[in-house]
Figure 1 (cartoon, rainbow, N blue to C red):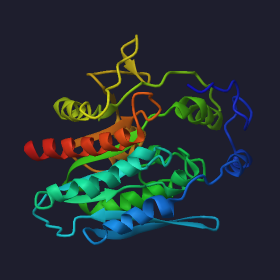
Figure 2 (tube, rainbow, N blue to C red; figure 1 turned 90 degrees about the horizontal axis):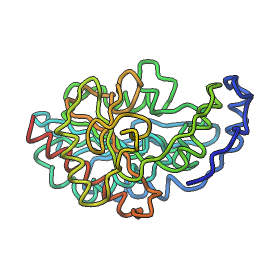
Figure 3 (cartoon, rainbow, N blue to C red; figure 1 turned 135 degrees about the horizontal axis):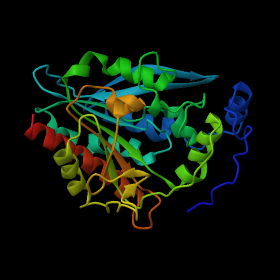
Figure 4 (tube, rainbow, N blue to C red; figure 1 turned 90 degrees about the vertical axis):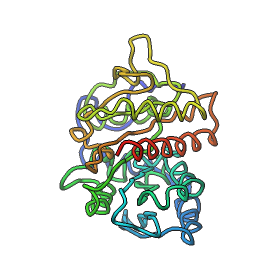
Length: 307
């Protein structure tokens, strides 16, 4: 694991950031990969088989990022809606490419059973800069609420609004990485003027259920499917995963709506957030993508069987 910095290099410990600190943080961010060549090009390849739409346009200075969604071509209002989101945290690579892999390799299996709506890269600036936040140092995955300060979150909420009450299942694809501990949590503590308390990163896959509407059997069905692809994270010595009690093997719970998390964006009875661990010596990038796709398939299958 990377060494945790003793003090974050921006701001004054104990003092929340202002505009100057946010500007300094932004000046340190560099584009490290291409949304256009790695994501948009793959979405374009899916256009012959699916409806592809632009549901928003992010503008950060001179940089513009079209926000793209993929829909079932033969949308049928008599069928339930399934929502798949990825890249809410742009640096979490398998969330983006796992969603695209699901569409490419598995979506046809559900063509006459569900209406699929997939937003594979909710935060393209974050994808290019390998960042958890957007360019304004705002975490999109804490910003899914009315009058959201994050363009990315607001755009997705507008996309989903017409079907919000018809979504049967929403799965939000994420990763937990070593850089969460070495960079992103220290940055969060510095931004908010709080002390940073070091923690640990679970080695393996786990899920986040909704503490306000838990679905333990649904979560365990997804865990069982993913275990065929990659290993499940064990709880630590205190029975926790990422600082939260493991309520079942490979499962923790958060109050999704209270925290403004993406998985709260609909009223779906079945919701989950995946967390893949790409830095494990026991997992390859291909396994991580396949684990995300397997989680989506298992989640849809369960939801359809229990609707």
